[in-house]
Image 1 (cartoon, rainbow, N blue to C red):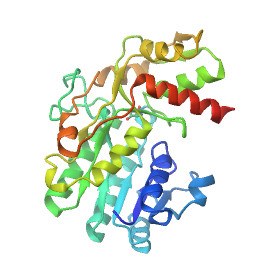
Image 2: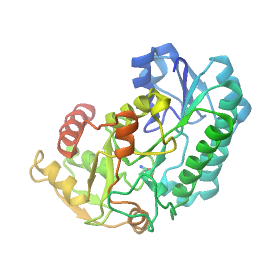
Image 3: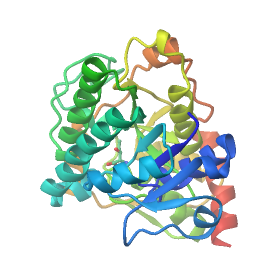
Image 4: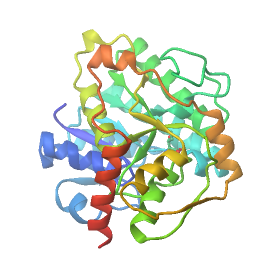
Length: 317
Ligand code: VAH
């Protein structure tokens, strides 16, 4: 990768991925792609080039790719699971129609493409524990439906046109930098904010509900490592299971209480979030990613908790 476009660069993943890519490839090598109303600010704006880049506008996308001589695109444009349930057609328009534009522009301009999938691509018929790399995918959420389509369309463009498409199935991502935007796993970020603010946390996900989670630094490493992997080693492409930890709300509460004595939580289950979470796996088998491109997470629940609390205390003063 020499000249990179991050589409959705001001979102939860994009804002940190853009800065990580700039630290590796150089500030001017990474273009921050954004849409009106979600303009970059601060260091994201000041540290390198930025361009309006709406995945639903193929001509706009093509012009940006040509202007900056882009050879790799990270397509992070999507509505997350809870928001998507309220706007299913928009979720499809951004997630799938938008992907068609990204893949066509990539085909015409010789770009590689990373479009993340999610554990949301699985459904209740999928084996829930140690979910296999290759297994049934019958998601119940529209977000999951767009993610399965993302995987199939990205593999199609690789097989039919030779477009270098790669991706991972992200679990819930936890970060102190940019708050999450409307996902089922957002509780695992919000709980840290409550702990640092000294507030009781109201948990919308029921006790005993396991979901795969990952600290953002590991997720960002996965993006770069996979896109830099030797293509001859790749048996899979779209999309790799990756895993770091799996926990239920009482376990993240206990991990925080070890460092914030007296921190309390109360359950007020959100029916929509709970129904989505119930349809997702409890844990994933990520042996294919480990074998094909040496995936290995660095953070577990305790080390993530230490780092989250330290950085949130600094951020929130
Ligand atoms: C969501 N954070 O909750 C996203 C993610 C696996 C979860 O895709 O919708």
